[in-house]
Length: 87
Image 1 (tube, helix red, strand yellow):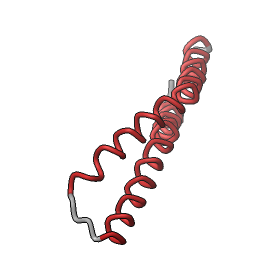
Image 2: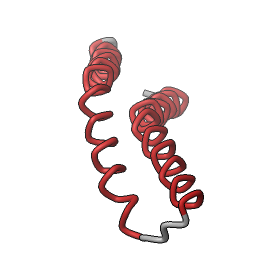
Image 3: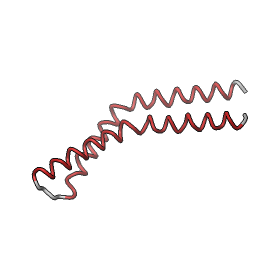
Image 4: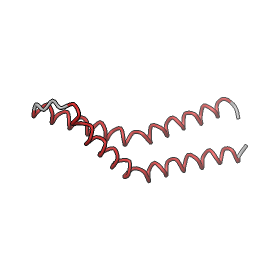
């Protein structure tokens, strides 16, 4: 395995990590912004108000996106195994 192939595998792994994290991060961002707007509009300045809805939303998004994440990881593993078998 030469340096270009190692960089290719590393780039694919970083891109896979971004694909796995992005849906959950977007859900957390949207829930945080919505709760922040709600706090700003109602002038409720409770600091702990954001944690429970955000935790629940991230948990639900993990349950929804888990099959997609598993499929992505499985495909990446098949790709790595094919590269190992091709050596």
